[in-house]
Amino acid sequence: MSTARRLGAISFLVRDYDEAIAWFTDVLDFTLIEDTALGAGKRWVIVAADADAQTALLLARASDEQQRAQLGRQAGGRVFLFLETDDFARDHQRMRERGVVFREAPREEAYGTVAVFLDLYGNPWDLLQRRLPQN
Image (cartoon, rainbow, N blue to C red; front, side, top):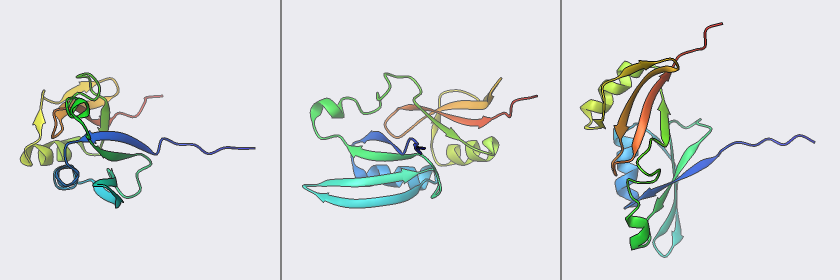
C-alpha cells in the first residue's frame, strides 16, 4: 500500500487577516487560495506563491497577547521561510520597488543566489534562486 504525503500548509501568525492578505498578494504577488469565515471572527485563509504551489501559508490571526508578542519572531529571529524564484534579479528588484526591506545585498552561495528580506512583521525570509547541482 502506497501513501502520498506532502507538506500542505505552514501556519503563519498575523496581526490582521486583511493586512496580511494585502501584503502577500500586493507585495509578494502571492495568490489568495481560500478565505473562508469560520465564525467568531476567525477565518481559514490560505495564500501561496502561486495557484499550483505544493505548500501554502495558513494565515493565523494572533488571538491573545502571548501570540501577538510572537509576531515577527516565529523562528526566534532566524530565517524560517524560503521564497524560491526562477529569476532572482526580477523578483529582488520588484520587491524592493514595493518597499520590501532586505537585510543584505544579494550573495552567491554554493546552492544559489540569496538575500534575506523581512516580511511585514519582521520575520526574516530568504529570497532564493537555487543553482542546479553540477554533475
